[in-house]
Image 1 (spheres, rainbow, N blue to C red):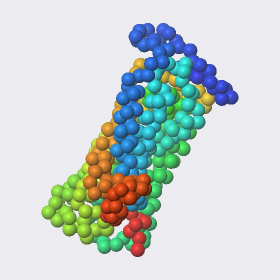
Image 2: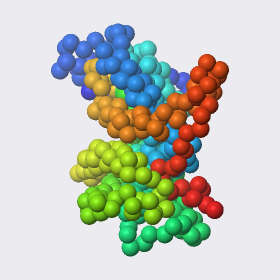
Image 3: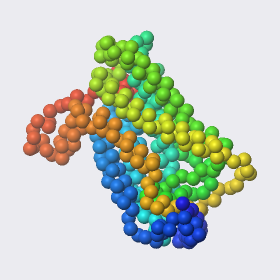
Image 4: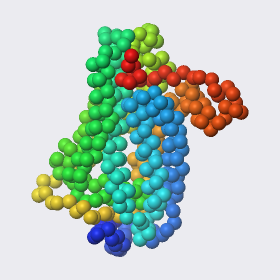
Length: 358
């Protein structure tokens, strides 16, 4: 790839120049082609599909005030939305026609950093809640006030506070403003110092280890209590039946199995490339344009893929039908189909500190 630095003085965008010698290795590449990459078109279509099928699950979890589940699905929706916007803004390698992304990319890269942490943090909350639902040594008919407060604090810390903290800490470890890649769009920049690993890349894998512990514990408990599964859930404070429990577990486990190798790889790559040279101040007004020759980054496809288990678990069945019915009622279809006015079951998929309060 070719990195083209763009200096921005007083907000002025200077069109970059190519170093043609760097392009000799790819003689078929036309840097001034304005043709939209096929990869960009495919990514937009699939990301829109992934976003659309994730919305029913997001609506359901928000309605039931399930912060961890809503956070997990919400970040999936966000990542696919950014896939769409970025591929539409930078669909080809003609960098002379590119928008510099100021303000938009500044916000997107911080939210994307928060999203990576928020996704694994929400998974940890989900796995913990599911494990507690099958903890036969600590079954309670109703959580105490202190338990609800602890759960609320933990959920907000892992789903909101820690992700935002990592996003803000990025200001201390970014060597330049941001990168813009063809199709993938805005990407964060990191310096290759040891403190970058400690301030950013180590935390998602640490939370993934916690997720892995709860996932293994859940598998053991599901197998151990397979004959009394439904009765244990009925006596717990989860408010879940067997079907909802397993759907939530399968969706969270699938996303986790994708998150673990990707987060571990990011940690490994940055750890092995640590340099010990002297610190240099950040070049805050430098943007780097990078043509990709029509290649779509793997993480863009991952964002599409993790929406599939969410849809398979929450996009159909009784829960999803209640969401679809509510949308049709809002659109006024009750006059045409009076049966839409019938009430549906709105019980929660997770024990919420709010909804469980008496």
